Image 1: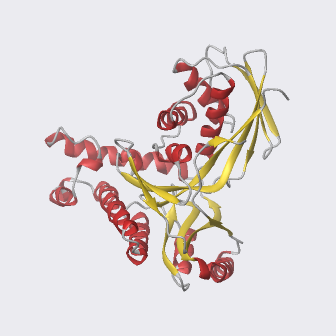
Image 2: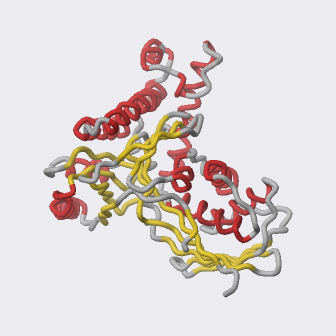
Image 3: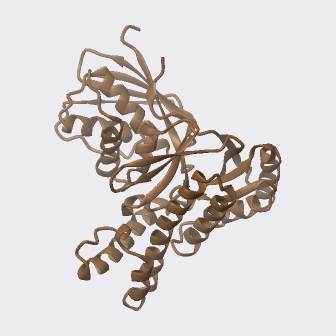
Length: 369
């Protein structure tokens, strides 16, 4: 049909730096070769009709609705983006959107950000607007924060928008500046889906944010320049240990130590020191399990099984936690053996057959030509 265009945006895996993004810290994601595709066709009115091939479900709404509200439906991610784009002064034309997603939903690989970013590209192009990649990521984050109600940081939308093939990005979530880091050709990013997603994930995510904010409030009382845990050192945290509850202390310790691990991991990649990088991944998982308490028995089992396989540099949970996926850095020649051993061991213990994805780092959002 005349005027029809297609846009894709990738999901992501975070190599290290978990729950640091909303603390204005450092993260190291890579876009992956699983994407969400949005086909957009213009229409003459000011309505959006959105159809999901995955859900077999369609919904329609009016761009002139004076009080758009969340429907607690997958389409909120699309409608929220449309609302925020309009609020930013970019008047949108009506369109039919057809969505196809490859990013496994509920796996922690950021299917939501891929949907937001692909939809934003489609809606903007259909209306004759363009937005630079970082600014587009910020608008999509705002849509998820304000319309969907998920208080996510900027990482997912930014890597979906700005990712580079065969590269990871070390992103400073305060300045939004990033460093491009090489991923050696001899390793693969192997993502293991536990096939579980515990119901407490969203509520506990928001609780962790509140606990971090409580830590920031404590330090800001004596140091007004502290606006995030990014501004606190481990030495300062230790000096305040008796003034903090044990829970707040451990939440802060994870975030502050994780920021340090990301910086060390970047140096390790620059030096092609995969052994050091893998050790930092392992330490990250232990901190997420013990201090931040966002792991679960299935994630811990998956990481333990990965650590027993030859050719694995390191493994950790990735994403918000309480289920979803792990990420392992594996020598290419050991990938098939890894898949067999981990899948077999996991199914023996849990009765669940995991999905295992061998990924490469992919390019960020773009029009499909």
